Each structure stands twice: as structure tokens, then as C-alpha cells.
Length: 536
Image (cartoon, rainbow, N blue to C red; front, side):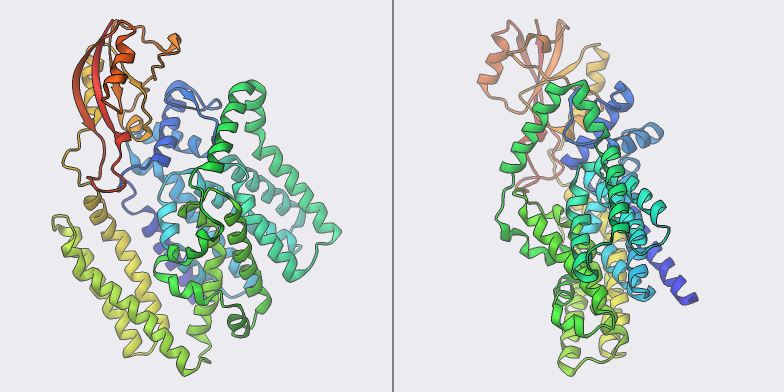
């Protein structure tokens, strides 16, 4: 029992390093920028309910995640990226903890829960999404935490209080990103639960109804309030959002079949863990394994039904997938009933992981970045991990120790690899932020406007509203006699549209807020601004 407690503490340490270390590193992406801009406007403009982005209504997403970022910004400043991301990382950290509690409760095997949770927290997609302040992670975290109490209620443990508590958490999930959480986590889980354990009894149905009512009341409270207070704007935004979801990033049903790749180092074991006939025979808990298996499969199915497909949308599937992977690894470490071919297969898998660790220790010196202390530390630590993996496989013939070697590689990546990656990605020698213009604009007691542009990342960096000019809408015209305007294009047609209004444009400068240089796909025209000084 004491040893189990140490393993739990080890999980907490690994999770803390991977989700909190160097949280301010890596530049803000567009999803985060939208959240941060809205958060700053909440705090500075008082837009806590009627959320805005660059002073325009932003009703596409519920406000809960933005509230959390806003509070952190008020405490630590809206330029502190690490502080703004902290609530999201904490959400992911809690998700991992409660996933451990779910597996531990369902299986009554703390070591299986530990292995599964370690697989989850070292999963590439989990680390990536968990360190980014977008809406997704909050929705998934509240849902997984709520599911723990939901499962307790299903097992007749403090039934009514747990159904109520689960309903509150499910409601907070909906208040984070709409019905996404219930759709991709709760429904797939419950379908699997019914298949494995049978249809619910009346007592369960009654509790589920209470849970659902609470979820709806909390989760849709903001939507209802906004609809009643500003129906035209709300409906227009929802229609636009629905159209975008049906037409943007549309991929075929088969797009997500490559999901194992998102697990990173566990790609091969995630596939083995889903070989249903084999794993079912290798565990003394076939029903519990089947629950996580069906949860995974139905999660994949429901995700595939959505026309818009992105890799980060696969995050919910990574949760039950970690458990199915954990089942095989648990068998591998403690059952010792596998045949020679299986031993050789796992030997090959961990050898590949050892080679990857060794390749990192050498390859880091060939990256397009100046060698610094973090480069050396990352190289040495990756080499240490490689030695541990090879020693465990070839000398001690102990796959569990090899597993810890892989976990250590991921920990070293969090401690030393992220700063190297951050330096490598910030490679645009032409970088010149429009934020450097802010002092000049304020000194002249005027304002910077935008025209025909969309760049949340730049709005965040500028740390002030950059009002949009619409030539067809006089109410958007600046009241100042002299002001600045930023455009994403320097085309003559765009300039003429403003000159037709009787404004005189004088070119000031070009600003490039791209962190990455060309030809990176992340280098975009959206972050390049041509600034003019305008006089009426």
C-alpha cells in the first residue's frame, strides 16, 4: 500500500513537470489568442457576459475558460503568457488525477491506474493540448472529473449527491465549450457501460435525469441569457459558426484512423491495447477492459461523424485509449505469461524507443538553433534515458524498467526540450512586432485602427483594442482627425477604398509578427501588417 502511494506521488511529479514547466515558452497560437484577447477585454472593458474580441461580439464560445484567463491576467498581467495558460494546464493536471481515480475505482488495481495515467500524461496530444489555453481542455477536464462522481453514483455510492455533483461538473463542461464534452466523452462511455453491464434500472434512470437537468440548467444558462438579451447577434453568430463547422477542415470519415500517431511514444502499444480478442484473454477483468475498449471505439465513431476534423479534436479519445494501453502494459509487466514471439515483439518496440532517445541526444546538435545550456542538458538527459531503456531490455530483461526509461525521456523533454523547441521556432529574423508602435501612437494621443484584417495573435500582442474600419459602415469611422491604420495587404485597391473617403494615407512601416520564418506553414500573411498614418 505504501508503495502504491509513492507511485501516485510519482504521477503527480511527472504530470506537474510535463504540464507546468516552462509554461510561458512557445508562442501563443490563434486559439489561445482569441481567449486571451477576450479575457483582457473582460477585465478592461467589463465584457464579462457579453464577450467580445477586438471589441466585437464573440458569442461562438461560452465564457468560463475566458473568465479564468481574465482573473489570472488581472493578478499577473495580460502579458504573462505562463499565468494566462496556468488554468488550462491545471485543468489537464486534474483530468489526469481523476482519470487515475476512475481506473483505480473501476478496476481496483492501483498499479494499472498508475500505468494508464502515466501513459495519458506522457501522451503527445495530451501534453500539447494541456499546455495551451484553448476551450477544449476545460470542457474535457470538467467532464472527466464529473464522470468519476457519475460512476460512483452508478455503483450506488452516495447516489443522489454524486449525481448532483456530476451534473454540476457536466454543466461547467458545457459552459466551457458547448455540448462537446458530453458528446465525445460521456455518451461513448455510457454506451460502453450499457453494453458491458446492462440497461440501467429505474433508480439509475431517475438519478441520470436529475443529473441531466442540472447539466442543462448550468451549461446552457449563458446561451439562454445571451439569446434573450441580444437575439439577432447571437443567432447570426451561431449560424455563421454552424456553417463554418460544416465547411471548414472537412475531412472524410476515415481521417481519424491514424489516431495512434497522436499518442507519440505509445503509438505501437496503443494499437496492441485495442486488439480486443488478445487483451480480453490476457486480463482477469475482461468486463472492465471491455468498458474502456467500447468507450474508445464509440468516441472514435462519434468524432468521425463531425465533418470538421483536426488532430486536437482527438483528445477525448486519448482518455479511454490510455486505459486500454495500460491493460496490456500491466499484463506485460506483472503477468509473465507471454510467449517468446511476444517477448521479442516488446523487445523490438522498446529498442525502437531507445534508438529514438539516442537519436535525440545526437540530433539535437543538428537543429537550426544555437547550442546553449538547454541543448546540452537535453542531449545528455536523452542519452541517459536511452542507456536506461537499453539496459532494462538487454541486461535486466525488465520491460517495466524500460517503461520508466521512456517516461524519463518525456520528463527530460519537458524540462530541457521545450526551451530548445521554443528557440528553434522563434527563428524569424524579420520579426518586428506591431506592438512596438503602441508607444508612439499613445504619445501622439491618437489610435491604431485596422482595415480588412484578422489577426487575434497580433491583437493579443498589441494589448489594446484595434477597432475595425468598415468602409460601408460610417459608424466605424475614426473620430480622430489623425490616426493610424493597419492592413494585412498593401494592395492599391485597399488604399484607394480609404482614400475615396477623403483620407490622406502616408506609409509608416511594415510589421511582421510571425515568430516562424518562411517557408514554415505557420508563417502567415495574417501576422504581417502594413501601417499608414491617416489624416482627414
